[in-house]
Length: 273
Image (tube, rainbow, N blue to C red; front, side, top):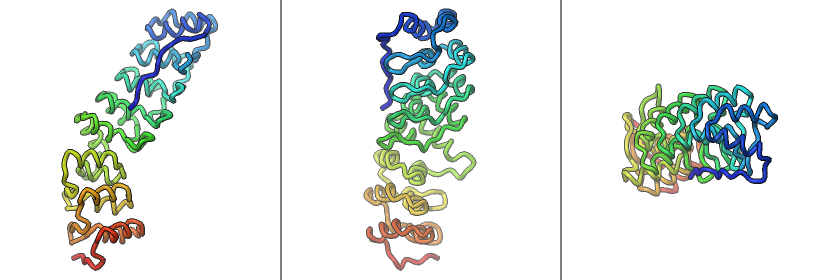
């Protein structure tokens, strides 16, 4: 779970601490005065939080804009590896997010635990932020160190609108696949497991009759294939033209997937039409 960092101001000069407080409170002129008088624009507290981080969290768009105009480091990270964009995304500060991205913030920056701004916005159900990040190149495939993608955390938290938005974005311009097929394609075992908790049908079919196991076999995604088989997916499910997952894996030349399917009882002599 992405969490906020503390905001204490320890043994710093009074000017440094006052500058950070001014930025956090949205006192633009005060903050700029400190900079004019020699305070480092990127000075931070003991947790690595600087003025840009603090102003971003509180939604002070004007302060954020002025700091960036004066060349504050847009991608400076805290001790936990969070940038201003992480912090604004977690707090749902949509206008700040837009300013940061417009000024070159890395939309796919990962914190020490692997959190991205998109993950944080998805976790907290900030729909507008999720949409903006997706429209500006945020990747859905970057997972946290414990394997959670933005889709997985949105499913876990029950944020239905965010889930829908993530799925729609993932299939933009393509044939719309069911959610479990998308998880299978990405080898996203966390999302797949959560989807299967809500609907026990591991053999849900796409419009062309393929199951998630067919998709996993096509992409060679062993982890999600194993999960599907463990959840009673039919190893010999026949799609269009009697194509089984084993046919798909064999055509792709994926020896590990072929072995897994055979070990789970796939018919070696199954014929297509």
